[in-house]
Image (cartoon, rainbow, N blue to C red; front, side):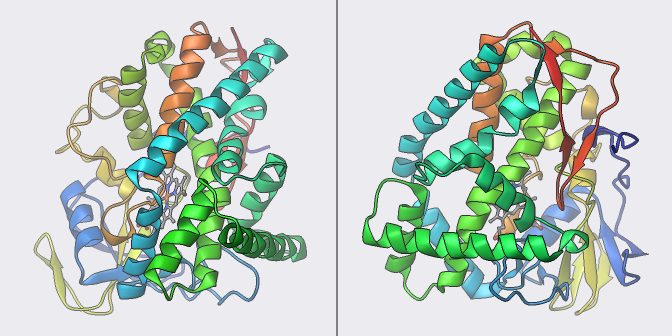
Length: 386
Ligand code: HEM
């Protein structure tokens, strides 16, 4: 049981400061960039690309964050074409159709939670299930058990330490499942997100099938794992440290502001840096960076930069942020799941607070048992009463 770790909003992060030279965990030198404006510049400056991390190339197995073939690790025109494809699938008309689907899933799970009765584990009954059940609905996977998606999510986001035989077997199984799903949706398109993806990819032309498989993996599994983690950690924070604010979330607009605030202050996991490499000589805040040098960007530090967010954690949960959050990154690799993440978090918090306005932690002083994912960390269980 891992209980000694600080909650994610209280993670020890470098303070916002001008760029400085340091060493990465693997011993390689890197410029550490922490201030909001500097981080934005590096993320949006075409002289910086996603650094090659030397991860082994995948065979039939998939790992969304480390496989060089995944969208996440691509650069340049192939990357842009792929992103346009996803954006082509997420048209306002499609999204407007999907919104009520999310509402329906939230409503169903909420009633199931209420039927279990207090004290209940809100992770087992609600936060840990919701994004997988939503993915199932969005992808039109009638009949597939969401627990299967959850198992695949665990292995698609597995880090090297977890890569035993079972993990790569699950990854292969997921690749096979995704390939069959893509073929099925091509034969019989519907209104679901996979059909829209296939259609957008076929219109764009020349998108390798492997890339589509990664996109399905991102949607179904790794993205859902991120949403589940942020939702559980948000509840832990709200009920543990801001219990007086809970009933206000019942109003949808307030839940929208709070969602943005929580995404901004509670990071996904313990990873502090995302790296980029300079392909040409550049300058960050007057500091020269030579071609080939690595830059380690700390999104969490930038989101705490007191020059931009002076109130920090003490700020009003329901006031709009003074500048856009960097929780989803920025520039060419800006998160593709923002609509899905924001919609689920806002809807879940709003409906939960409206249905259970006196929701509270059952054991406020109990230590948190953390579940460690490759990119996420979240409470493994949270007992609540109402
Ligand atoms: C609260 C939940 C989420 C958070 C905090 C989050 C955060 C991020 C961040 C910070 C990046 C950029 C990383 C970088 O530049 O190094 C990213 C990229 C990405 N995210 Fe998310 N994400 C979330 C949910 C999702 C969901 C639900 C999906 C899937 C639908 C998703 C799909 C992606 C993809 C495909 C990329 C790579 C985009 C590219 O490289 O072009 N994310 N995410």
